Every structure is written in structure tokens, then in C-alpha cells.
Image 1 (tube, rainbow, N blue to C red):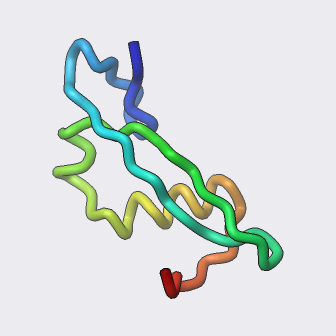
Image 2: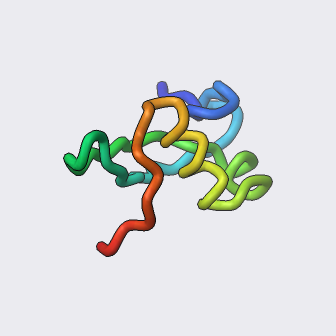
Length: 66
């Protein structure tokens, strides 16, 4: 059973999907794959979720060229 990374709702209650976000730490590329429920993905933009992930993991926030 998986849970939403943002709100903690289980997949039994709300279907969720995997999203992969990319960033940089000290110039090295990093990625994080998280699960986000349909409710959170509808209420927040992809950019808002990416900013939150970058802030929590301490990524350098730069626009990616990829």
C-alpha cells in the first residue's frame, strides 16, 4: 500500500500516481520519485509540488534544460 507524499492519503482511499522531479545539489543532478494522490495533483500545480520537493530536500532551484 502506498501513500501520497503530500497529504499521506493511502492508495485505498485515493488513487495516486508516480511523479519524478529533477534538481541539483551542489551542481550534481538528483531526482526524486514521489507518489501524489489525484486530489493533491488537482489542487496544486506541478510547479508548486516541484518547489516543495526542492525546498524539503535542499535542492538548488534552477530551471532544468532537460
